[in-house]
Length: 215
Ligand SMILES: *[C@@H]1O[C@H](CO)[C@@H](O)[C@H](O)[C@H]1NC(C)=O
Ligand SMILES: *[C@@H]1O[C@H](CO)[C@@H](O)[C@H](O)[C@H]1NC(C)=O
Ligand SMILES: *[C@@H]1O[C@H](CO)[C@@H](O)[C@H](O)[C@H]1NC(C)=O
Image (cartoon, rainbow, N blue to C red):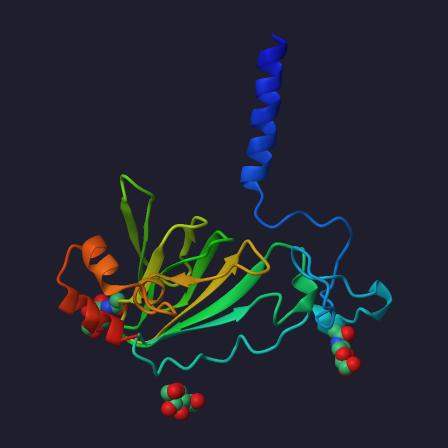
């Protein structure tokens, strides 16, 4: 019986750890002191007496991002880098602009679940589950629709409407991080050896070399 309780206790602790992303705050706020050279998990707190409204403020998400790039989309992220007051609070926000047919390419956030709201236009959104199923879950989203991308799962959105599109995403980390699949695989610095990639993708090395040259 005692053993069972211990197991249940351990399970409860594991579940708490597994649910949490950024650790919870231990005070009202901990505005990041970006001048401190002390290294901690997150950023050091500024003296609360020097905290001002501007530490919690950002202006500019009304402005469209520049989508003149090969994928035709632009993410404007407002995280702890832009708003030091987000330090320890476990959230951030982003605006995503899509040109006609624009793509926010397959990527994942190592530290955040994302909840996306379509503000304008029509998007086709998808996300892929882990091995071995690798199930693709997709949905066409219209203005006002909301879709969730669970933490760590690769996902994408493509504009399938007739005009441009805009989405606002909330993320469950002050610093969600982004790993764009294509860049990580074909654009790493230094490059992953082409024979490694040729074997992984089961294609000819010349095709891999072409892909590597694109990044
Ligand atoms: C960082 O240091 C600079 C120069 O001393 C100062 O102007 C600035 O206000 C400081 N920033 C913070 C967040 O304390
Ligand atoms: C948008 O980005 C393109 C490519 O970098 C650049 O040529 C263009 O001037 C930018 N447009 C604006 C309005 O900043
Ligand atoms: C795009 O325009 C066509 C023709 O006007 C219309 O039939 C179609 O429903 C539109 N598609 C979307 C996603 O708005």
